[in-house]
Length: 232
Ligand SMILES: [Mg+2]
Image 1 (cartoon, helix red, strand yellow):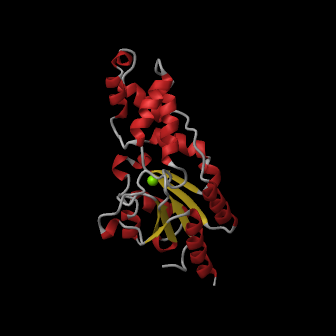
Image 2 (cartoon, rainbow, N blue to C red):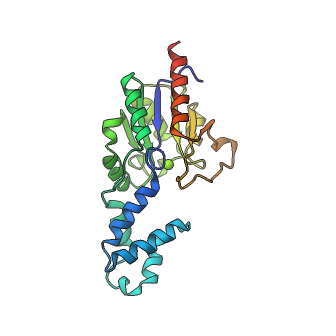
Image 3 (cartoon, rainbow, N blue to C red):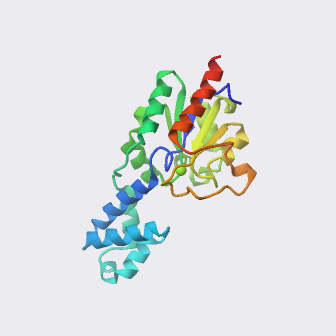
């Protein structure tokens, strides 16, 4: 497989930036809607740090029932998903993307998640300036989120490359690598401290990435080794 790579496609959340920064940014936006934003943010962040996921805004309105008379959970979710996130590309990510573009290697981003929230992140990160193709799988339909192959097929067609010429780099060992592996892409898990799923292990051979790297430096080494093989 190494030696043929012509395109590098990345997951977005917790791969190109740290998702906890998005969560923090969203909690700030939500807290600003509430009477005591300092207290609201402290509670939300404390729960996040102790692993609470999914029902955080419900918990908040239960813990502060007087606020529930002014705002609903649905409204807070709406603020969270539509807020303008304060997030940035990890600097080694921006560097590698620029280097790949400079030598004519195709680049892409393939991301799951509600379209509105993902679009806000894509815009905040300025991804259109950093990669050739961005696909939010939600635009194909909820049923085409990973591990559907549809987004990967779309990316092959848009970049004009075969599965064997592509590598997918992501962080989630449960869903990121199933479809690209099935199609014959190379796969790399980028495992960084601070990621939400840092401690999560893949449970099946089919879901495990072929390679795992523990830093952007290591990832760059892999990518360039493959690309050099290609030019030799
Ligand atoms: Mg991710």
